[in-house]
Amino acid sequence: MKNTPVRIGYLLALAALLAAPALIYPVLIMKVLCFALFACAYNLLLGYTGLLSFGHAAFFGAAAFVAGHAIKVWALPPLLGLAAGTLAAAALGWAVGALAIRRQGIYFAMITLALAQLLYFICLRAPFTGGENGLQGVPRGTLFGLDLADDHTLYYPFVAVFVCAFWLIRRTIHSPFGQTLRAIRENEARALSLGYDVDRYKLLAFVLSAGLAGLAGALKTLLFGFATLTDVHWHTSGEVVLMTLLGGMGTVFGPVAGASVIVLLQTELADKAGSLVTVVMGLIFIFCVLAFRRGIVGEAVALYRRMTGVKTR
Image (spheres, rainbow, N blue to C red):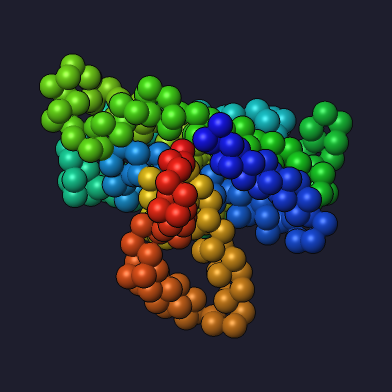
């Protein structure tokens, strides 16, 4: 029963999510959900496995292009397009992870960044991506006879995909596999001495994180109808790191909060601050790092534990 408040919180969040289109522009909510899923996928790698990747935009952007191409050119239904993008990202994650996990720390991060930049230049030159113009005019299609061109019609299937992906991440974190990842993060040498195949666990975590990041990118293409080079740019990799740290690394809901803050700030400041958006966000990030070292949700969870003595999951 000790986790009852947590379950109630999730149910309230789901209820608010279902009722949100009545008050908030649904496209904005869906954009937040895209990047929230992206950040949650990244948190699985950084927060629970201790692997700092600087190239996660490669999986986000690759899936965006593959899903868009599958839906527009191959005329696949939206669900199959999303699946194609997710599988492509997972396969790319396996290829990158197999090389990157051979190193640790900054060397791991630099390998992921280098390979992501390689993919960026491939997307810049590849004909099916549209180069600098990007892949445009991706139709939303239909789902079970429903025309997804309407934002409100798309919203609830979109939420359903996000909830399923979020449940998978949470289930993974609290499974024996997730506990092993935490052990590797805390003391890799000890986990190795206990007989765990550390490299295998790291690779599985990397592939799962890449696949879910790819699902987020595919959802973004379905939502906006285009994929651009920004999706595979190193700046997008930096943004997901910022979202994860701001919300709370190693917490289940932290990346959602971080992504929500960043996306809403970008939306609100785009017209008011113009090119200074990055500067404003940087200052906010510095303040949060100094004042909330465990992130917004991390500090809230710590405060809740001190006040109640209840362990949250």
